[in-house]
Amino acid sequence: MDKRKIEENIFKGLMIISTAIIAGSLLLILWTIISKGLPSLNWDMVSRIPEGGFYIGKEGGILNAIIGSIYITIGSTLLGLLVSIPVVLYVNVYVRKGSWFANLTRLAFDILFGIPSIVYGAFGFTIMIFFGLKTSLLAGIITVSLLVIPILARAIDEVVRVVPFELSDATYSLGATRWETAKVLLRQCIPGIITAILLSFGRAIGDAASVLFTAGYTDSIPTSLSQPTATLPLAIFFQLSSPIEEVQGRAYAAALILTIIVLIISIAAKYFSKKLSKNNI
Image 1 (cartoon, helix red, strand yellow):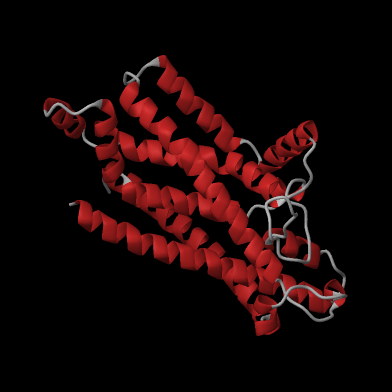
Image 2 (cartoon, rainbow, N blue to C red):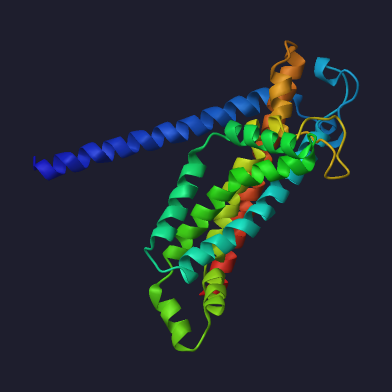
């Protein structure tokens, strides 16, 4: 058999094995969450806040954690976009391509991307102490924003960089300013931006370490940015720490709810990304 054919078969087999491992891991995770969480999932879980003795098997639900997670995730994603999009446009439109500043900016985002979330939580906690802030929804949003900004910036940056150079040259040839060129590039990158938002949303809503010291935890639903808020990851953590089997089942039910939320966001993002891609053609 030809040497190249042997190499092709080897790498093809490795790809098949890798795909099977990834798919199998996903199915195993889903099976564990569904099989253990579905029996404990009921309407009270998603429609009521915890009541006295909830964590020892009494009545109540995790509505506070669901709403708290949505508050923090939406707030941090919007704040992250307000920071990352201007930075990406500046690096790709206003700065000369391949300059040391652009490369240094991308390197900084790569380093920030790899920092563990617990470090962001500790950094956010330090900022809170410096300014005399308490655990609150605002502190959680700011800390999670720091976590997702590198994700958003690098993802959007890669999308902008694959836009053909001819598009920018065409806008400049028509007398457009750099800001007008940036708006054209931004419009072409909307599907990629939605994908970046999806990545950051999944990271933000599923992270527990960054909000452990900053957002706090409460059994009530926050009505202002200065109040502490619960999140689904922390609710799962606290319930799994209980020795009571019924409470542990609620933890898996909370994990199932979190998975469903991410799935809904993923499907919606894919739909709107395809729709906007067709409109941009």
